[in-house]
Amino acid sequence: MSLCEGLVQTLEDQAAAQNFAKVHRVWLEIGALAAIEPEAMRFNFPIVARGTLAEGAELVTELVDGEAWCMQCSTRVAVRRHGDGCPNCGSYQLQILEGQQMRVKQLEVS
Image (cartoon, rainbow, N blue to C red; front, side):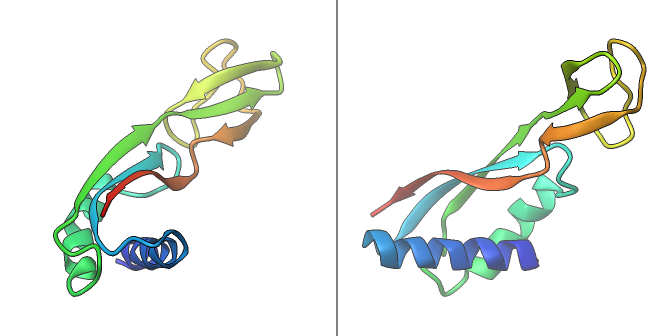
């Protein structure tokens, strides 16, 4: 719920900065390693958006795969969840590079 509240606040801040009054659609990228449930976001967003410029807006979520640097084989690799080993060498010495973020990718506004 608090993530949706933060999202609505971001939308309101952007509306003030970019001079729009209504949000019709929000495309949200959610990293596979972000520990955020897209279904929970889609469920809670209409509740939190009620009475705001985002009321009635559609929330479109896109899951983005995680990427890490394998320190053992010096390769950039895809990871789907925390605790996965390197698909190339099996090492667990991975430094996460991508996939822990949540960001607004695009807005449809008026």
